[in-house]
Length: 142
Image 1 (cartoon, rainbow, N blue to C red):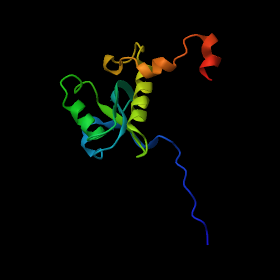
Image 2 (tube, one colour):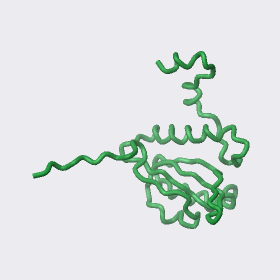
Image 3 (cartoon, helix red, strand yellow):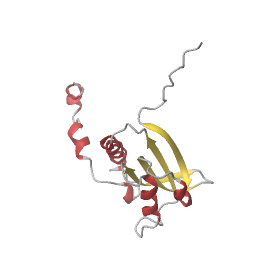
């Protein structure tokens, strides 16, 4: 008799994802899904998707509710055409989801090409672990 093999997930944090979905499909997203999502302004035929906003859903109604709010938003509603989301495993803590969102947001914070909605305030947590000077790098790794 064969022993059952343990399946190892390809990713530690992300259980599954979908990318570059038409914004009209927001209501197909499962309820109470936790993770990080991205809003884009894009063109499916030309295959470009510019980031408009990065957000997260750590609890409550989840990513679907956040997409619904953005869909009907006066501020963001007409600025995005597509979305992606990255659903996390059930054992991922809410603070870990916030850290993922902060990391992604930090990447766009000083991007001149990013749409202004994608630029978020700097993450205090990331600023605490940031090594500004090359001479500090070895000490930061300790």
